[in-house]
Image (tube, rainbow, N blue to C red; front, side, top):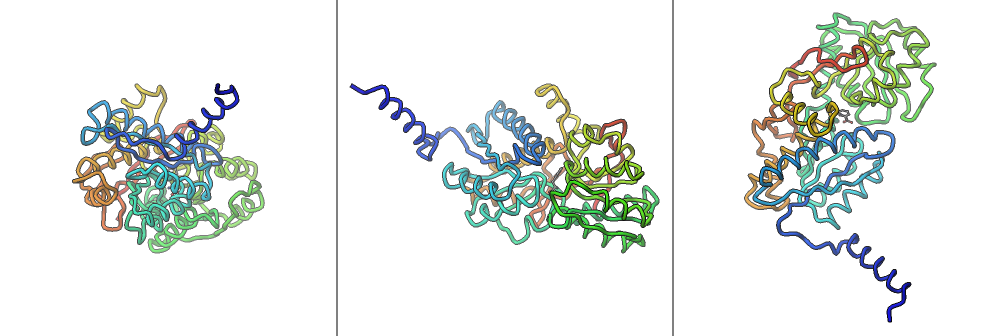
Length: 380
Ligand code: PHE
């Protein structure tokens, strides 16, 4: 007779085998992997993106799937760390044998995960990573968004031409590839167009007390402060800026500000601030409106830019799989590279030869603790 204890062990062993790679392939299913920051410091990046991917999967499967098969997305949480991003991509490729990957949001983690995707020859689309280096010389890595070279240039033009200001201070996260790369692109364009950088400071990622920096920034008497960082740090900076008397409207940021946590944490402190982004809930684009309506019906709250981008990256991938002559990573890669005029919620996308999608850049204003569409600027 099998003892209770042995039976328990047997069940545990079977569960382990199932989870451990002996998973049977379902011939009616196409497996895609998604690695995201579902917990940790940047968790809203991951959870917002997942909602967008889920909506895309539901719509696609409800309409008959891709090549007559169901799409299944396997989600992995990298806990907002580059180390886990690497592990999770390895796992999705080696164990789950996914045919393509979606992820990440933060450029630092797309760089890390993308290296594994590239050497494993599995195509990856990042919905939101904008650092130029993410797709550079990586045959298998794509993005369905603009780059920081474009975003930084548009930020500079917005300050000079729309706000009519030219004395600018820059404050950025020194070791972060996103923040430092965006700051670099911004400075170059601002100077080229006749603006002046009156103060320029890098802080260390993870710092929480910015008061000394803020006092120095203020002392240089800039008209605008360009702060290309992520929402979690921006909440602290905005609150401490108010203490030293820097008004919210002086701040201009980049897409990393996009999180409902920003306005929940420092909406009042950032009243009148602007940031460049991929989308705004009230952007006057036909496809965005359709997406917002579909999303609101399903989730009962407003989508963020990240949600719209997750939705677009997933839909673009499914469209490529449909067009690919076979469901192999190599055929899917080529189909992604050939994407032309794909109509997404965040604009119409054509993959250029650098694996980037060129789209208009939206400028968002923070007004009454809400993100409001201000204008759109086409990157040159
Ligand atoms: N562009 C940011 C990066 O590359 C990520 C991001 C995109 C964050 C959009 C918020 C909104 O790191």
